[in-house]
Image (cartoon, rainbow, N blue to C red; front, side):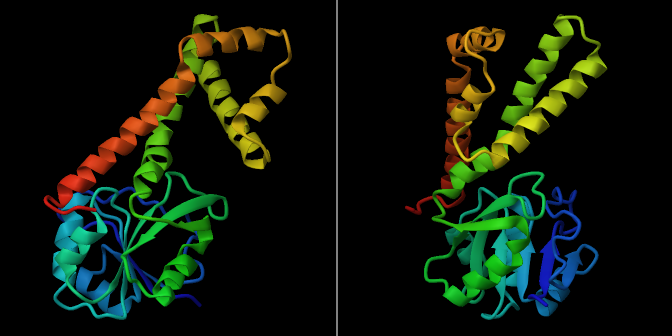
Length: 258
């Protein structure tokens, strides 16, 4: 049996954050959810407290927890814009602090979580969080600064790929397919491609070459994407998103140099 985990998705003053945890994620742990359990009960009964809260509610929760939480506790935040240094200033000395990014739609055993620890965190606390998140598949421990890129790709990337799938659907509709059929085919193509990429040992460029016949119609169509710099547009979208997350993180701790 793993550590007792408290998962806080709302403080009751607004809508709950999207639940990133699929069914069965915490099979190896006792889980206490808030709501319905109040925050102080979650803190008392849990070794690890996961705060899946937006910026404002996260600050409120940390300020509240600071009055009664001990050093043996571990707190993990999934908020992408509240830095560890601000978290520490709100909660004071005591619990080990972490930030985690888990991409949308993560399925147990098939995902990657990114984890950053407060400087000076004991290795034992890191192992507690790694064990708690092991259901994801892989847990990569990295610097807090690197989490900005993970947020841009792992969270924002879903929107970027949806834009691409939307374009495939619209193209098929213009070529005469009924909307429902075009949408179903576009979704299936995206899913099948994701599965191919998951099992492919090389790069996406390698796979693209393998599924493209030399001199065929797909090669000619790919030239349209190259001419319109689609790949570069995705690159810049990830950079813009990461820059926006970074700016918000800096703004959250004015005057603090990270």
